[in-house]
Length: 624
Image (cartoon, rainbow, N blue to C red; front, side, top):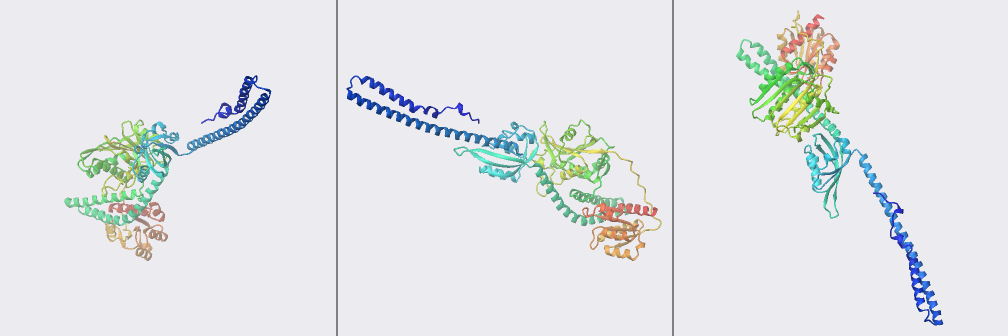
């Protein structure tokens, strides 16, 4: 509010200052008139007396006028001081108001006000810089309509506003009208009118989205670390069991070639063992403990090979409709991760059908440049590849975008659809969270889309999840296409060496040791089995030149397999060494090779794989 200059203002003091003089003159004029009317009737004595009376009247008139003038001057000075104080107070209030406005506009926080119904009644222009929305887009919305999902902050906020008390530093997830999600840290104080009636809240909010993403990422890493420790401890023992089951089943299948009916039973055991093997690989990959190596995969052929397995794993009520329109494109991805991604997507689609008859669509096509989803992902330019963006589509559906696309590359698109009920909007921000599931306790681990999330990012891909209550859910995964530098070389059959090589075989698990012994004996090797790495080292030291090959497990008491290999290589650098392990986190392939291992195998090891790798290794050493 502006303050007018003093020259433009008139008040009581400006009129009071000449009052005393006017009263004195008026009283003197009255006295003169009365004196003229009675002068003729007065005697000399009376005239003297009248003159004295007139002088007295004049004296007192002038005295009263002077006193009134003094009082008027005092009153004028007092009124002027009041006006000056009012001017100073008005200027101070204006400066304070301007300072508060400048502070609100300069801060990174957002100021807004809520009405009695907790609807936004006023919001600072700062909202435009943070969200790109205008204040008019926000005003009128209730806080309940902006919540992305319920959390502990929601309860604290509702408790505070329900009791009409101040609240401070409450973290809330919100979703803007266009579908984008933010985390805000909000503080507010209630306002009341003179009658004590609740009028709403004055609030300040700061954007803590990046902080929450970092917190969620750290929580994810902590969970993965905890899961990794558990998986690493279980995987070794479980892989030993699987190695024995799969290995002996493979040997049994080979021995039953002349008995087809019995051989089919061995094949079923082998099939179940391989499925268990994939489950372990999936857990270890999710926990970031398995050392998977990406390779160029013909994605069309890989998906076509997985289709029969997918169909067999789903109930008859879920029908898969597939369309594979490309087979020549190659994608850099670990084959096990591609199968994990497909299984997770199809499993989620099947669960969305909830047991009723429905269709799961699976489509693999080259991505045209004018594909709307492709353009949207290319234009999203997320600041962090792990951050998701939620977009509201004109059709009423919502789309979750993940990852980044390099438009300079060509991409192949893998699409999985279902005609289920879709995903609720308030859950979209959490669909890729580890352990998040909408199923009852014991009905789901919440790992499916988390696995998809990890595989897509590791393959430098991108993903768009589109969902609608009337159209179901559609997941589009985009992988960059790479060209092979050279055609793969054909595998040649390994030739047996002329003299049977002597193999030092080490494993602390009796069943696995017996399996590997039988496998190597069938391949024509002379095997010396040891249940302990120290015993194996003693046997090696007794005659270092007697051995052409060392095959050892990694996880053993007293001495690890890699330590045994290191000692053997120090004595005989030319000897071939094979290390197999199931603890994916404790020993990477690079560190094992650095210690001297020539071949690193992951449990469970199939007999055919072990025979092929060892034969190739020994043949190469003999040829050299």
